[in-house]
View (spheres, each protein chain N blue to C red):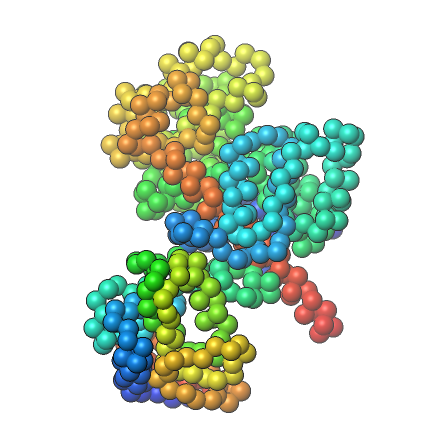
Length: 169
Length: 337
């Protein structure tokens, strides 16, 4: 069985949360960076919704993962592409799902290798809890907990939809 | 160990087909060669950043074991390892223990005792990296940086990366390799890679004295006349005249060689107008190639050097990744038993 969450409702939530976060922090010209693959699709949608004309960045964190010593290199690595100088910029970092927090740790390490940003706001579509590192999203489309047999996955890019999969189905 | 276990193909791949050593292109299929090129593409982007370093091999030790000197290959391997955050030890064997009578096996045992994770091996004997890969402790990756007349797989792959960058794909390409094919380990690896990746035609252009016997069996056509051989070419790869390898009088003279097989603007004009010119370096200006061509708009010789770092980062991280994944797999199997 595949249950669908309403993607538009979650995107509305992200958009509102980000607008509020930007206003609170007094950020006027943020840039978006999406983490491959789902985060990039979301960055595309959110840059339009937030009216950010500057092209968004795409981050592939394969070279920064902390599990290289266990599983080796991801064979499907693609080049990261940040079409702007990150030095001194206010960054909105976007991923589809946050759980352990390890992906975000890797992403922030990579971003800092491009320069020293002024700030980073973290936005995720879904926060599944189960954190292993002290990293929390500033904005989440939805916070939910999964049963151990459930998996959630963002499919896209057109149309974007969320799949909630029951193991064994 | 069965005979099959020691074949290069079996030796350099894990059970699930990941790279764990990089010894030769023999036995590596198009999918794996393409993975290497794709991974290298991502490392090119890393090389364009302010901080040209990723943490993949942090805390690991890479030993450059050069039994034969080579400035360019060694320095690009060194830079590649450093950009992967590894600790690098450069060992010029001609000035070290072997000259005091230590055997190759003893040298290796000592280096392994220093907890090395990878050996990059350049040796004048064909098959030396293969021998080391067979005898080394499990978990240590061996990368062939050129062995005898046998293979130079990272050079061939950086050439493939350069061709793909400029031509987009291999299908339909006509590629010529010109010069001293007989003494060239690169040419063998290049012919193998070009065929596997789907080039339309691989042509070798050389005098008969500088071609190995049965060269066609490597998967190429032969042309003795360079003016004929240059027709329709999309890529021309010049080989260095291996002066230090020349045994006996295989050539009348350098000047005669240049007249017949040197690449100048007149000969290049016979090729496709967008034909790219490649050379593994170091170039002998006026022996294999005219300066106006080497420095000209069709030359991609310096791109090859940049790509060499990215290719070496790719094979080093893939081989190390294969080793660690395999080790983890064995540990978990042992745990279940």
